[in-house]
Image (cartoon, rainbow, N blue to C red; front, side):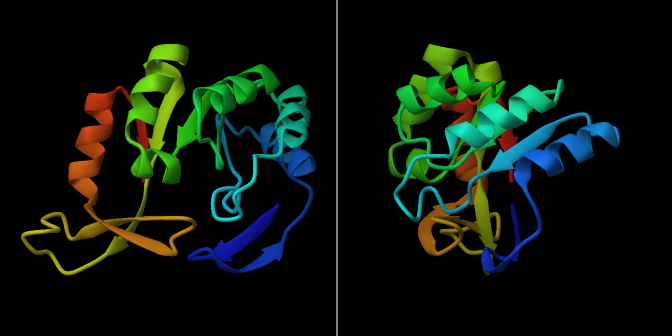
Length: 160
């Protein structure tokens, strides 16, 4: 488990399974687990960690990072996640949101967005631009417009 500021200068802060159990014991009512380098490193999410965390907690558990297909989403649900969070792959291929919502339900499909504050303009009326790959790649997409599109495609929740 790592802590970073704006996805850089990460430092290890402990075992994710132990931390999840600690947070659960302290009264946490929902856990969101992001493997923030899975997309930028082009690798799959750590399923074994998801399985171990799911065995330790009995609260809603959402997982994101490295989800590129419906099969990836299904693997996470079978590993114990209640919801999946799509981000970079959905920006690059928006149909992924609709495919996941159809296959696993919109209540289990979360659109996660990383955004960068920019000067409000005709291209960015919200004043925020969507970025992917751990905040390293600006996409030229207005954040509010993308959020609305995600909802249209079937995302049941939005995390910014």
